[in-house]
Image (cartoon, rainbow, N blue to C red; front, side):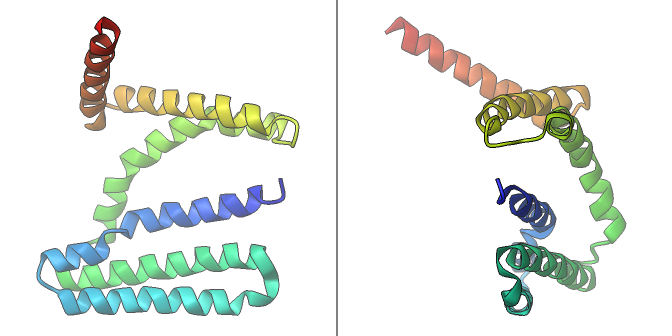
Length: 171
């Protein structure tokens, strides 16, 4: 259970990374291969420096170092994209807001449950299974209620699964 706070820090880093994950590919798409390589070199440098700085602090330091490196990498990515293709921070925020709402709706029930009951060695399996089901159901509900474009894709996937299941049953 000691790893849970570290996993939360790594998840925060993943959320930050996700926003600018395709920055290098965006630069390649507009013919800026050298700039893409330079961005990647800057991101790797930030990761190495951040992790070297926290070596004395063990795994907690590594988790925090990873988060700091990810934030620095995101800031660097935005700066490069802003200067090269005119990406504005307001546009990034406006684009991410619907996903933020969906995330909040999806995880809120399990987050409240975890805050009230706490996750222990005795109940972690229940939290993993029930929490996963609740989060998935919350996500589906959120994309429907908020009219997210992914709802139409989810309906198509559901129809394909239903058709496939019908074919398997009839065999």
